[in-house]
Length: 234
Image (cartoon, rainbow, N blue to C red):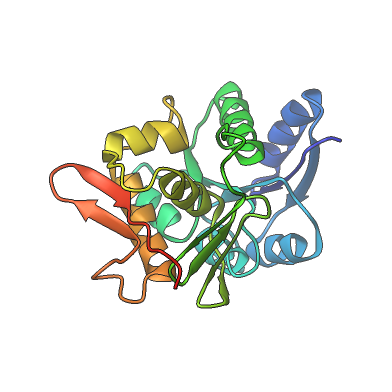
């Protein structure tokens, strides 16, 4: 079945070019030209990935991204004409999985899409004995259904937040540097830096930790990196 992608940009020529190129690779492409239309389509349709421009009429791309994260973990690639680091970090803060700065090469766009879809479909090979459901204290992670609950309350994680937590949970107690996590979760060709990992860890802690400033699950090994502390269920 063809992967369905929503492309959101108010510049119709850009949308037309992206649509044409993606359809050549057998993707099904839908389009929206302002923030409100994008949000409505994201609510009423199932997409495998959304390409979302930062600057949009009616509603900004960041606000659209934040709203989508309230009900979906669909992978989101932010498109921005700005090159400042703050815009890129803000996109990640609001739940984006990746960003591409305009002007971009369509071959790079397609490579990023393929990489994200590949990681979403099969994040990492697991041993057959690995449980599909992990219970650690008040946290319950369902790998097959990509669901996380804390004290029985479901937590809505982005695709990357789930992959990060899933990976750390699968290797409890093992410390990973920010650089190694960047490579393992985002891929060796990802152009971002280690701050990407810090942003996602902070957002993850805000969602799953009783007190994010004193994390119970995703802990820091000062001077080395991050690790998952496995709590035994009571």
